[in-house]
Amino acid sequence: KAGVTQTPRYLIKTRGQQVTLSCSPISGHRSVSWYQQTPGQGLQFLFEYFSETQRNKGNFPGRFSGRQFSNSRSEMNVSTLELGDSALYLCASSFEQGGAGNTIYFGEGSWLTVV
Amino acid sequence: GNSVTQMEGPVTLSEEAFLTINCTYTATGYPSLFWYVQYPGEGLQLLLKATKADDKGSNKGFEATYRKETTSFHLEKGSVQVSDSAVYFCALSDFGNEKLTFGTGTRLTIIP
Image (tube, rainbow over all chains, first blue to last red; front, side, top):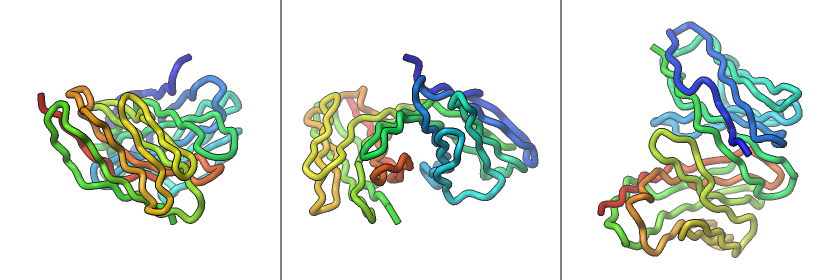
């Protein structure tokens, strides 16, 4: 079974541009989450989608947005990029069963550099 | 809100040494607890988890026990190998919630 797949793996953007990152969850998984990882702030939760609906949102500005499609694939978008948006963006998926301790699987991430 | 506190790194050990990485948490509910590992240039891999008090998660020689009375989930391994060198993250999730709250991570380096 294929794991969580993220594209692109690496990209460089200029300040003020926008970027879209893509995530394909593990087959059968309906919950998709996004995290930002930086050396200074560590791993921070961006948002979570389930059945095309955003269920949870972290404390990020409105420039960060996402969506989920009917096949559970997800995209996140960052508009008006700032230097501080340079980070590893991780997508995660799970077979949401309710209850406790669902195993959440991560992709290898998309490395974004803003110059 | 929820929070996770991990011991500060980096941690450097010799091969075959005993490893402990401390993790304590604060949560409003009854969380599930996880350890994830991140190898250089890669994403996160689930190492082990525990969903209720006194549960012991184990994998690849690593163990951690969910201690509700001390709100802790310390990671241990009896004999580390060079291949264990990585960054280790303690995390929690609330019941029925897919959001993970992570600690700051502990970088572990094993010297042959």
